[in-house]
Image (cartoon, rainbow, N blue to C red):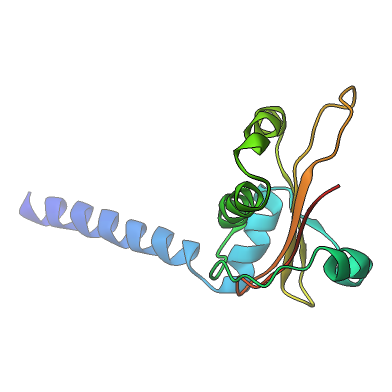
Length: 140
């Protein structure tokens, strides 16, 4: 009886260990699964040269580990730059998932809000490198 209980405990321990190891097997695999889970699109940073020149920002928000970090940091940037008045806009864009894209070659995130098609207006946007360097913040 003691042997069976020991084997069951050992089996559970080994199973949990294998599951946890599977979840941390390399940054690239985790990054790819996150991209699929959050529907993260790809983009080319060179398409945003004008925005970087005209809406440049000299901040660093700290390293970004995942899409959730990007959302939090971008919302903080937008509030700091545009003030609390942007909260009304947040109510509209919170009803939709944020549009998040990643440029692997330049390790940069592009995030913007999304509003209903029937609403007129612009949405806040940000370009933030993986290391937290903010390249641009704007509403457009």
